[in-house]
Picture 1 (cartoon, one colour):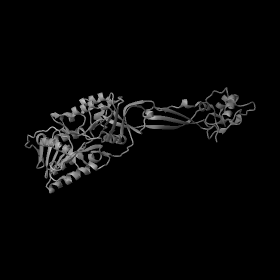
Picture 2 (cartoon, rainbow, N blue to C red; picture 1 turned 45 degrees about the vertical axis):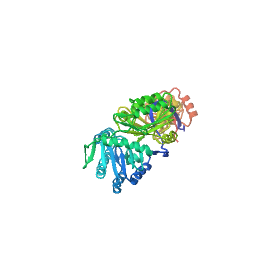
Picture 3 (cartoon, helix red, strand yellow; picture 1 turned 180 degrees about the vertical axis):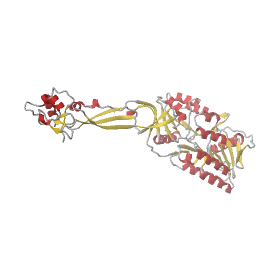
Picture 4 (cartoon, rainbow, N blue to C red; picture 1 turned 180 degrees about the horizontal axis):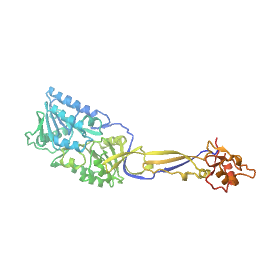
Length: 505
C-alpha cells in the first residue's frame, strides 16, 4: 500500500507592530530606601505607619486626602479623641468628588466613594472636617508643636490605594512637618469652602491666615503655583537618566514640552497607569528611542528624579494639578536610593511599552493595543499556531505532486508564526469494490464497451489488476514502482471512469 505522507510549511510573521504594550510576568520585591517607602502589591508598611502616628499622637492630627475610606484609620482617628487629641480632616468637596467619580471610575468606584461619604459623616462627630474644591494633596501630620512627625503620600488614604497601588510615601523631617503644617493651616482656614456640621456640608467663617512660603515643601495652591516651574528648572539643571512617574499626564503642559526636549539627548524612564486618557502622550513618545515606558493597572505614584536631585509629589503631570490643585512635593535625599526602587518597578510592573517590533520577536504571550474607536485597550494573544489537516487526494498524480507549495497558510494576524501540516493520503481502492479478472466479470455494458480493448487482452483477461465499483474501474497498486508500471500499460486511457489507486491493507 502507498503510505500516507506528511508535508509541513511554516510562515514567520514579519509584520511590525508600533506603539503597543507587552504584558510581563510580575517579579515583586518592594524596597524602602532612606525616607522613601515603596508601596503596593499587598504591602501594608505605610498603613501601619499612619496607624502608628495616629495611635501615638498626643495633641493634634492633621490629615489631608482627596478621598478617605479606610476603616482602621478612621477608627484610630475616632479613638484618638479619648486621649484628648484633636484631629482635623481636609478632603475634597462633594462637587469635586462627584466630578472625578464620573470621569474616572478606575480609581474612584461608586462603592469607594459611597464608603468615603459615610466615613466622613462619622468623623464629623469627633473632629473638624472640611472640603476643598481643589484638594489633591495627601499627608498625615501629628503633634506639630511638640514632637513633629509626618508622612506625605502619593496615594489617597483608602484601603486599596494604601496596599494595592504602586505608590510612594515620604517620611518627613521635623522642619518639613512644620512647613507643611503652615501650608495646611492656610488651605484649611482660607481656601476650603465647605465644613461638615450636623451631617451636612455647609459654609463656614473663613480666617485670613497668611501663607508662609516654604523652602522645604514645594506647593501648588490655586493662584500660587510653583511646582511646574520647579520641575522644569530641575530638568534644566540635570543631565543623564531621569525617572518620571504620573498617574495621568497630558501633552500640553510646559513640563511635558521640556521633558520632550530633555529626552532628545537623555534617557527618560516613564512610569504611568495604562489609561486611555494618556494615549495622546503614548502616541507622541512612540518612536522616540530615549523614552522607556512602564505601566500598571493601578499605578498612582508621582515623581521626577534626576541624577542630581528629585521630587516625590502628590501632583499628576497635567494642567489640573499644575494650575488648579492643592499639591505638595518634597525633595528626596538620595537619587541613587530611588533608582533601586525604580529598577524594581521596571521588573514588577505589568506592562512595558514597545516602540516597534516584529510580531515574531515579541517575547510576551499577550499584548495590549489601543483601540481608538472604543477608547480602550484590547488584549491580544501572541501565539505560535499549528494546524493539522488530512488531505485525501483524487489521484496518485495529485498525491505525488503535493509538496509544501501546495499548503495554504491562513492569514497572519497576531501569530508569531503559523505551521500547517498536511497528512496526504493517496486514493484507495473502495472497500466494496469487486475484482475483475476477465471481461465476463464486468457486468456493466457501457463500461465494458469503453474499456474492453484498452484493459483486456485477446484472451479477455485484464492486463492490470482491476476492480469495479459504482460505474468506475480501479487499478490498485502496492507502491510507486507498481504505479509507474500500471500507468505505462494504461497510458492511452484518459477517461475519468478509470483510476489508479493504492491497494487496500
